[in-house]
Image (cartoon, rainbow, N blue to C red; front, side, top):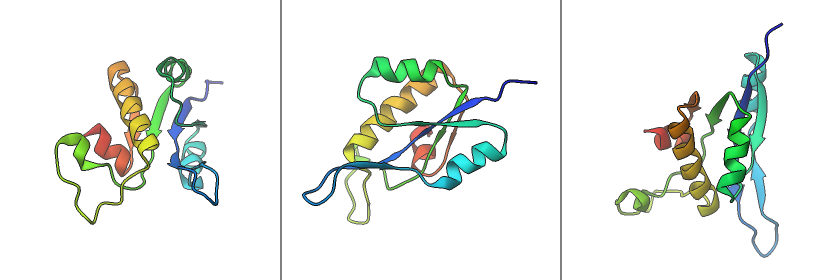
Length: 120
């Protein structure tokens, strides 16, 4: 029997407000698709330590970058248009670090929505 691949998934993140705590969110369709294709989904929260993130990636066989709100165009030298619904800064900073590490490692990765934009 062959080993099932561990596929990482990032999560959406919402900062705490005065009436609710911070939380991460992941739509079930993402991990259901990984399960349906024979993989084992591993949820990766927005960790702050680069060493911790590297340790997590060492144990994964691939990654699915999920969709979500919009990337902040100011990171890439463009103006912020009123129609942009930006990601929470903690998620965007994490996703950018994550994508950089995934590319440096040449790890198999699939991006959806914002994840695809990061890869681009």
